[in-house]
Amino acid sequence: MAGSELAVASEPFLQWLDAWYEALPSATLRADFLEERDPRTVAVIVVDLLVGFCSEGPLASPRVGALGPRAAHFLDAVHAEGITKILLATDAHPPDSPEFAAFPPHCIRGTREAEVIPELTGLPFYSEILQLPKSSLNVGLETEMEAWKREHPEVTTWVLVGDCTDLCIYQTAMHLRLQANARGKAVEVWVPADLVNTYDLPVETAQQIGALPHNAELLHRVFLYHMALNGIRVVREIAV
Image 1 (cartoon, rainbow, N blue to C red):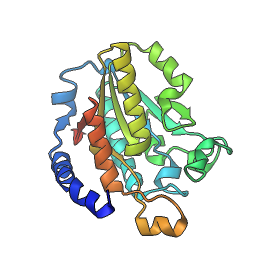
Image 2 (tube, rainbow, N blue to C red; image 1 turned 180 degrees about the vertical axis):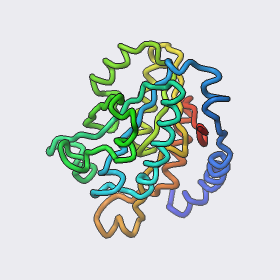
Image 3 (cartoon, rainbow, N blue to C red; image 1 turned 45 degrees about the vertical axis):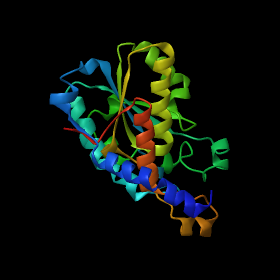
Image 4 (cartoon, rainbow, N blue to C red; image 1 turned 90 degrees about the vertical axis):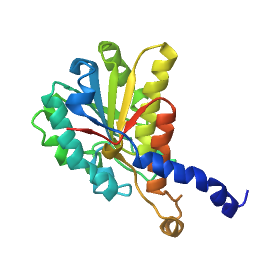
């Protein structure tokens, strides 16, 4: 199918996708979320809110950087409500990471890019947050993450915030969802759309630098939809 034909054939779905995204339901932390579950059964995973994705380096994005203050506000609110199981999944690549065949070298362990953003390190309970270094898009593949889950069987609800919607957020959310399905466990995975985002690389810019383009708005919405399609609770926000 030619490109123009694909665009025409996809128009009804894209219009539907836009309407679906605009109509995402909102939840409130106290009245909706905590009314139905014990805070001790909830864990929040903050994914890759690092200097190298928020402000400096080849993969830094202002769209992702804008998540910092909102994520910090959300974490402060949920912690005050007794949700104290907060995990920080962070890229910490070796200098020769195989991932660098797909993406420019980024967040190499021990460098400034691999540091957690100040909005999070400034939280009064930051020392309580468990940091889980990862060497791929999916922190669920790390043995330390799997060990933590075994030690906390009471966790039946996961909330994901951070970046990128179509990469690490998607991979981690799907890992949690599919693993629960495979093991027959009643687990919920929540993704608030206002607390995740992805980067933008226009076609013209990508062609100039020899990279693959990346339409942030389209991919953000498509991957939120695909998570919802697989039983992940995608909401506009969990208002605090």
